[in-house]
Amino acid sequence: MKILICGKGGCGKSTITAMLGKYLANKGHRVLIVDADESNPGLYRMLGLSKTKTLAEYLGGKQRVKAILDSPELPKTFEEIPEEILSKRENLSVISIGKIEDPGEGCACPYGVLAKKFLKNLQPKKGEIVLVDTEAGIEHFGRGIDLEVDVIVNVAELNLESIELSRKIEKLAEKAGLKHIFVLNKALPEVLDKVNVKPDVVIPFNQKFIYESLEGKEIEIVPQIEELWECISKLSAQDPQSEAP
Image 1 (cartoon, rainbow, N blue to C red):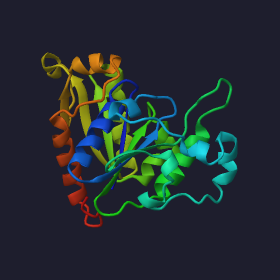
Image 2: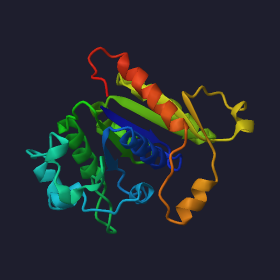
Image 3: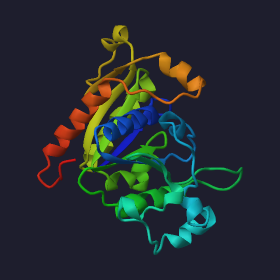
Image 4: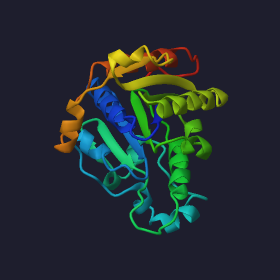
């Protein structure tokens, strides 16, 4: 199963990706987190893992990626992913597609194409789950990365811009025929009745995450992540062609 997590910048995509990845790994699933965000450096820290060489670097750098994409030998299974570009702990692994490192190096479009090709090629087996942490916004829809996954987890926080973007994400997911789950993150109980939204999962605001982030600590799983996984599992069970995770 392939699950993509998306939403407005700062809504908590990487946090939820990290918590869900840790939760599933603890439950015995073999989990691969794909860091498809070209700018956010925090995912590895949240998981307590060290950074590794990116897939783009392994292929020779951004300038070579475009030419290589015409006939790449990209991995089809977890086992085929080179160890040197994986950061691992037990049955949880992270791979980064590519990062912007230098001023004037050009746009991140080649990384988006590489992410799409990588996800298209990769075919997880039963018990294996791929989580895709995307860049902020909806450019990943334009690049077609979302067309290579099974479920979209759409994250918003309690501000109008984030909620409006989540509504657009929902419409785009529906147009693409993709299963969709709406998560309202950083929720304050006294404000919930003031917003006209019906989230599938509500994750309360927790100031502890701010302190732990500033201290460089690994993320802890909140109880609502189990609820999120139950929603994903129910959606997958509705598809007769989908293998049980």
